Image 1 (cartoon, rainbow, N blue to C red):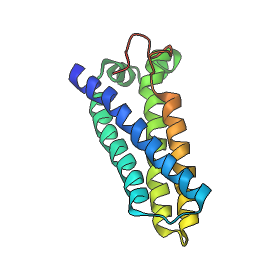
Image 2 (cartoon, rainbow, N blue to C red; image 1 turned 45 degrees about the vertical axis):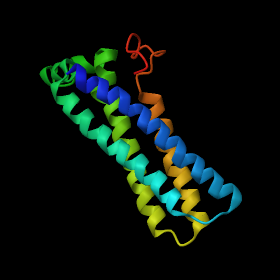
Image 3 (cartoon, helix red, strand yellow; image 1 turned 90 degrees about the vertical axis):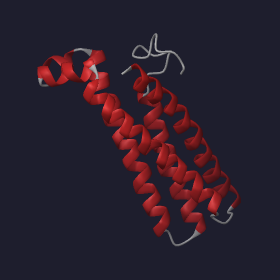
Length: 152
């Protein structure tokens, strides 16, 4: 399980980097009213792929982690009263699923958009919103839930 936690932790940096890359491309596109290029498409695609891989690792972790087992055993009641269990069993997972859905919906809308300006704007809105949601629910080392977890 420690190996999977390490992989899950390292993958967050791939998400941060690809998310920032996609957002910067979108900001540049919106501000300069430039064409939506293959580089813009790749930035969004890599952001989505890194999230999808993270989701798969997260699902495996969810079903083998002691915190998830505690959640399943108590059927919700005790878990919701204890912040660490609630955080990992509900809040962290739910936020990740919402963010992943936003990126997938955003990419779908970008593909269907009729203009390059609209593509950049949709990319910016959906990718930025997803990254903000993720950043709010990652157990960073300076947060109560991430204390002692380290940066990598």
